Length: 297
Ligand code: KIV
Image (cartoon, rainbow, N blue to C red; front, side, top):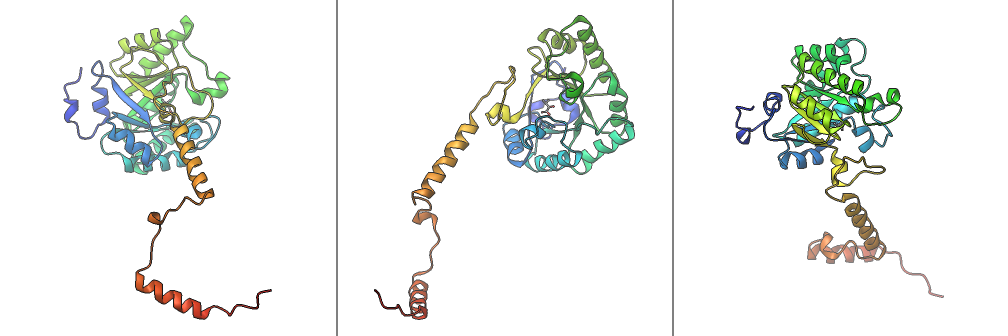
C-alpha cells in the first residue's frame, strides 16, 4: 500500500506508480503528440504511454511492426512538451530490444536523453527478463507488457486473446513473476481473461495495468484515439468509446468547405483592413496606373 499522499504529488514518477499497488486505480492513456499529451495530462491521468500503437493510430500502418525508434523518440519529445505532471513512458518499438541487451539499453537511454521519457515499456515475459534487468541497472525504469503483445503478430498469426488454456495461463503467471524479479515497476496485461489478471494481480507486488484484461487489475489503460472515437476500422471488444471526435471533425470540415463554396467564408469580421486614409490614396494611385479602357463593342 502507498505511503505517498498522491493528491499532493506534483510530478508522478515510476516509484509513485509502483507505490499505488493495491491503492486507488492507476489511470493511464496513450498519447502521441503535444495536443493529445496536454489534454491527457490536464485531465489528471497518472501516466502517459507513448505507445507504438502510434504506427497504426497516427502513421496509418496496419500493425505496430514498422514504426522506428527515431519516430518513437520524436513523438515522445512532442508529448514531453505537453506534460507537466503525468509519468511519461516510451514504448520500445519492435526490433529495438532483440538480440544483445547493450542495444536495448542504448535504445532505452535514447528515450530518456532525447525523448524526455521517464520510463520505457517492453513487450515479453521471461524471454526478455534479462533485458529488463539490464535496462533497470542502467537506471531506466521499465514497465513490462504480457498477454496479447502486438509485436508478436507474426508469431501469433493474428491478434488473439492469450492465456486461455491451463498451460498458457501458467506461463503468463510465470512471465509476470519473471518481470517483477527483473525489476519492472509495473506490468501491462493485454488481451487475457479476467480470471488470470486477477491471479497475476494478487501474486505480484507491483501494479498491473489492464487493457482488455477485465476487472481486477491495479489500473487501466486505453488507446487515446479509441477512447475519443478517432480510430478507423475495427474496435476491439474491450474498448469503450467516450466521444465521437471523428464525426465532430467530419462535420467541421464539411461546414468549412460549404461556407467557402457559398462565399460565406471569410466574413468581413475575419478580414484585415487598411486604415481609411491609405485606402483612399491607394485607390487613387491604382486607378491612375490602370491602362485606359479600349472601345467597347
Ligand atoms: O502501444 C500501445 O498503445 C500499447 C498499449 C495498448 C498498452 O502498448
